[in-house]
Amino acid sequence: MADQLTPRSENFAEWYNQIVQRADLADYGAAKGTMIIKPYGYALWENIQAYLDKRFKLHDAKNAFFPTFIPLSYIQKEKEHVEGFAPNLWLVTVGGGEQLEEPYAVRPTSETTINMTVRDWIHSYRDLPLLLNLWNSCFRYELRTRLFLRTSEFLWQEGHTFHATWDECNQYALDILNDAYLDFYTNAAAMPSVAGRKSEKEKFPGADITYTLEALMGDGRALQSCTSHNLGHNFAKSFDIRYLDRNNELQYIASASWGLSTRAIGGILMTHGDDKGLLMPPRIAPTQIVIVPILGKRGDPAPVIEAAKRLKRDLSDYRVEIDARDSVTPGFKFNDWEMRGVPLRIEIGPKDIEKNQVVMARRDTGEKKFVPIANLLSEAKQLLDHIHDTLYARAKKFQDDNTFVVDTYAEFQERTAGEGGAGFLMAHWCGDRTCEEAIQRETKATIRCIPFDQVQEIGKCIRCGSESEGRVVFAKAY
RNA sequence: CGGGGCGUAGCGCAGUCCGGUAGCGCGCUUGGUUUGGGACCAAGAAGUCGGAGGUUCGAAUCCUCUCGCCCCGACCA
Image (tube, rainbow, N blue to C red; front, side, top):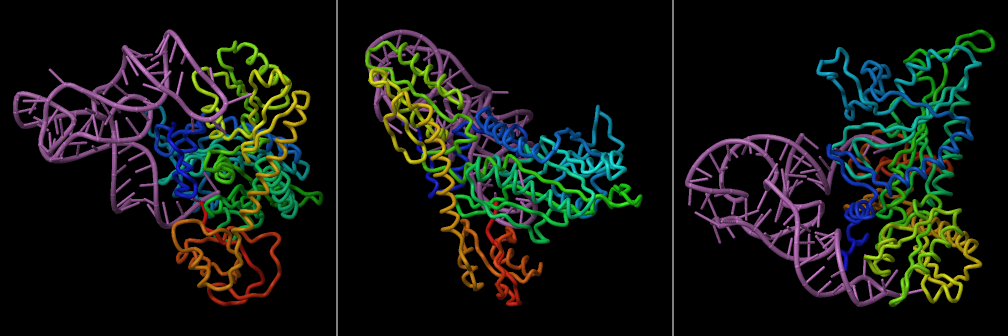
C-alpha cells in the first residue's frame, strides 16, 4: 500500500506540495526557489500555451522574443515601475570574469526593454497598433516560494501592445481579458472567476488600470489568475514614444500589457484536486484518456495489448496513453492515474474483448460503465465534455457557497480570523487607500478586485463608515 | 528579513543524548508465482552520513565554523 496523500481538508498546503511532486508535475531546482517542470507538468503548460496562443493571434498579436538581460538604467526610467520591482530584482554584475560597467537586470517583466525598442519602430499612426506577445520566463527574487505559485523564475507570456489612443488601448486590454483569459479559464481550465479591476494600491506599478480575474481556491484563498494592464500614456511619457497622427501632430502612444503565468497551473490543481489527487480539466489534460489493459489469468497478454492499441487508434482525436506496465497490478494503475488526474480511464480485458465492449471510468465522479466498442469515440467525447461541465459547475458552486455578503466590520474580522482562507467577502469600501491598508493590516484580507458586475448600491464603508457606491471583493490571497 | 525544522542509498526515515567498521521501509535489478481497485516469495545492487576544521587510538555521533533546503510570518504574479 502506497503512502496515503494528506487529505485536502486536513492540510491544504501539504496536500498541494505532495500532489505536485507525486504526480510528477514539478520538483525543486538546485538554486533556491527555482522549479524543475517535469514532462507531465510541462505538457499541461504546452496545452495552456496552445490554447492561449491561438486566442492572442485572433486578436492579431504576433510572437517575438526580447532579451533576458536589461540594462539597469532602462528599469529605472518609469518611477512607479522601478519602485514596484526593486525588492524582487536580480542583477548581473559580472560577465566573463569582468565587473560590468552597468549591471544588467534579469527581466522581472519586459515593459522597459520593449518600450526602449519600439520607440524606434513607431513614428506614424500607420505603425499602430503594434501588437506583440512574448513567451518567456521571468525572474523575481522570492524568499518564500511554492511550486507553480511563487518561484524565483517562472514561465509566462507577456503581451505588449501599443495603440493610438487611450480608449483603443483600454478596449484591447479588456478584449484580451475576456476573449483570451476568461475564455481559457471557463472553457479550457473549467475555472470560474470574478472579473474586475484592481484598486490603486493593488494595480501594476506604472499602470492606469489593472484588470484581473480572481479565482477561489479549494482552501478559500483567492488566486489572481491573470492580469491585463492599461498602462495609458505613462510608459510613452517615460520613454518618449510619440507618433504623428493624421493631422501631422505629435501624440503619445498608449500601451497595454497582459500576462498569464505558470501560476495558472497552481490554480488548476487547487481548484479541481481532491483527496485522491489531481483532477485535470479534460480539454488541457496532458493525458485525456488512459487505457489499462487487464491481462487475464494465465492468458496470453498479446491479444489484450493489441485490443488496447486498436482503441488508441480509434481515439486518435485525443491524447491517449496505454499503461502496459507488467510490474504493477491494475488496481495500482487505477490509483496511480487517478492521482495524476487523468479524466477518463478505459479498462479492457479478455471478457470485454469477447463482448466487444470496454469499461469507462470517470475520474470526477468515480462512475464506471460498460460501453460497446462501436460507441467508443462518441461516448468518450460525451464523457469528457460532461467531466468538463461537472468540474466547472462544482467549482462554481464552491465559489458561490464561499462568497459572503458582509455588512459589519465585526463579521468581516470574524470571517477572516484564523489561518485558512475566508472565501470572497463582498463588502462596501469607501475607495480610500488608508482604509484598504488598515483592513489588510488588521485582517490580512486584500481587495481582490472591483467587479465589473458590481451592483450600484449606496452603503457604508465596512471600516470607516463613509459612503460607498458598491461592494468590492475582499479575500485572503495567494 | 525574523521565527522554527531538517540535511544519513533514488525517496521517506532510524541511529546522534551515552563515540567502537552503516541500518529499516518504499523504490530499483533478477527469477518465479500473480493480474477486473494500491500482489507475493526469494536473491541482489546501491550511501564521500551536506561541507571544512578540531578533539580522540577511533567521529554520522562530541566541539567550532560554514553551506543548503523546507515550513510559518511581512512583500509579490
